[in-house]
Image 1 (cartoon, protein in one colour):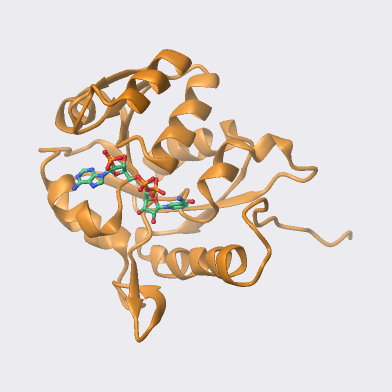
Image 2 (image 1 turned 180 degrees about the vertical axis):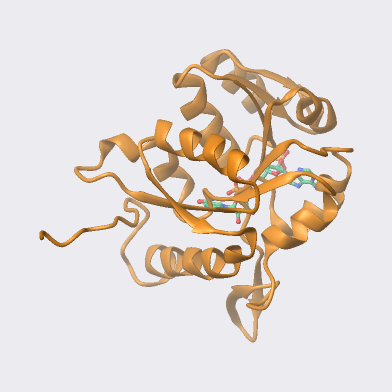
Length: 212
Ligand SMILES: NC(=O)c1ccc[n+]([C@@H]2O[C@H](COP(=O)([O-])OP(=O)(O)OC[C@H]3O[C@@H](n4cnc5c(N)ncnc54)[C@H](OP(=O)(O)O)[C@@H]3O)[C@@H](O)[C@H]2O)c1
C-alpha cells in the first residue's frame, strides 16, 4: 500500500519507519524536501518525499501528523481527498487556564473538525494514544498494547485496523468518528502520566482480560 505521511516530525517519522518495515511504500509530504533530516530518513527507510498535496494525491492512505496549531491551513492545502482514507493522529492540545487541555473541548473533537475540512474523506482517528516512540515498539511488549480506532466508514476502519496491527498493537474498534471525543481526552491520560507524573514515555495502554 502507498502511505502518504504528512510531515516527518516525531509521529510522522515513527509511523513511516514502522510501515516501511512492514513493506509499505512511504511518501512523506513535507514543506521542504531538502531538509537534511528528511533526506536522511528517506535514505534510511527507502521512502520518498514530495510536497504535502502531491503526497496526499499519491497515497492510498494519508496520515496527518501535524501540530494542531497549523493543521487547518495545512490540511485544507492538501486539496480534494474525497473517498481517501485519512488517519488523524493529532491531538488538539492547547494551554487552558494554565494547564494542558484540549482546544476542541469535549462536545466535538479534532477528528470531527478535520473531517469538516476534508469533505468526503474517510477520516479515522487513531495513533493519538501513545507517544511517538511507542508507535514502532508495539511488538516489543510482552502483551500487545491497545490502540483504539474510530471512524464512520467500516471499510476504511478495517484497512486502518490492519495498519495498526502491523505495528504490533491490538486494534479495538471505538465506534464512529465522534468517539474521537473520548480518544482525545484518553490521550491526555498518557500525556499526564508521561510528562507530569513521572512514568516516562516507555509504556502504552493494554487490555487485560479476566480468565473465565
Ligand atoms: N509526539 C508524540 O508523542 C505524539 C503522540 C501522539 C500524537 N501526537 C500528535 O501528532 C501530531 C504531530 O506531533 P509530533 O510530535 O510529530 O510533532 P513534531 O515532531 O513537532 O512534528 C510536526 C511536523 O509538522 C511540521 N510543521 C510545523 N509547522 C508546519 C506548518 N505550518 N505546515 C506544515 N507542517 C508544519 C514540522 O516541520 P518542520 O520540522 O519543518 O518544522 C514537523 O515535521 C500532533 O498533533 C501531536 O499532538 C504526538
